[in-house]
Length: 385
Image (cartoon, rainbow, N blue to C red; front, side, top):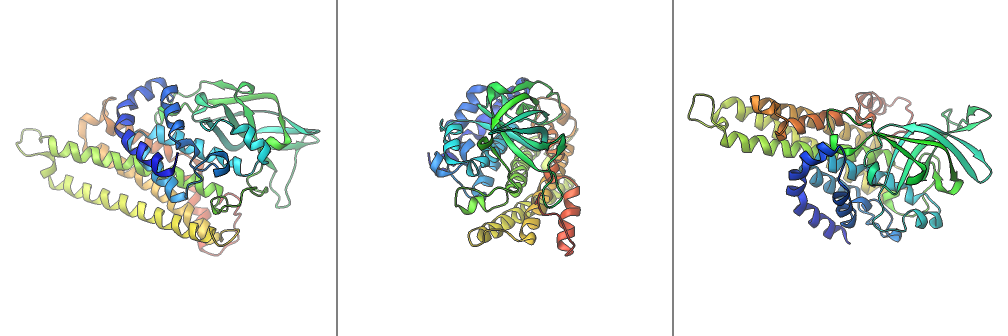
């Protein structure tokens, strides 16, 4: 499967994803057949190294694919984003171990970067326990990963920069208990409940640090900042979702008559003004994100580490796009009038999904402060950029 084949399959599936959106919400996860089809099409190996059968796509291609899927359904786009970014560990694992985890070309791996677990070194293994929230797409996974603090002598092990050391622990599905806690307002179809590990034994070689370890695969994709890929992934899902919301309200405006009138909703000046402003906002946010991705990608092909300025630009563009897209979905929802409140209306689902995305820490309000510090030339911890 090539990237061109994957994107062509995805383009054809957009209407199907849209038609199945209500089913995804009712199940509160992606159905197995849907996830399997997406895996076979290559959507979950966009960022996986080529030597493992992955597509090793560029960040721009990753963004393009996510926007397309999310135009069909944001939950499907979100699960794609999580599976792909979780699979970045493949570039850091010893190749023997990576081949074990990714032996099936259609394997699905999901994970949570936040260090909600605790790991104690025991010889050549870690003993890991923890409970992680937001395990998106976990029901369809063969492997799961979770960030874990390294504990020595009952205390967190500290890095030279003063932060506690954490590593991504990779578990076979049978070592994890999935807890159904996913009763939420938006992204209902992602199945993002909790996952629990109790004294799970993880070989040292099946753990990685995305902060201190170096990739074993030489590729500009793995020079590109990991958390930048995660943030731009969220923004890309948001852009696809908002694009679909705008398209939906434009279709509605051209077909819906104003109350007591003969004119279409589209002929109202306020509707024309709000649609134009929303379109400009969407295109501006997409252009800023695309430009930041391209600039960072060009640098990643020439240097082993991206500058603080480039990393900050990427995160600022991602945060801006995600939050602007929520505003766009609010505009579409408002213009839809009373019909927007019904659960079978696409506008309210897009509105709920958009505002759930804004709650992710990678694109939260605090990111303005962190990127602002970089812009002002102030000393800033760059580990999460």
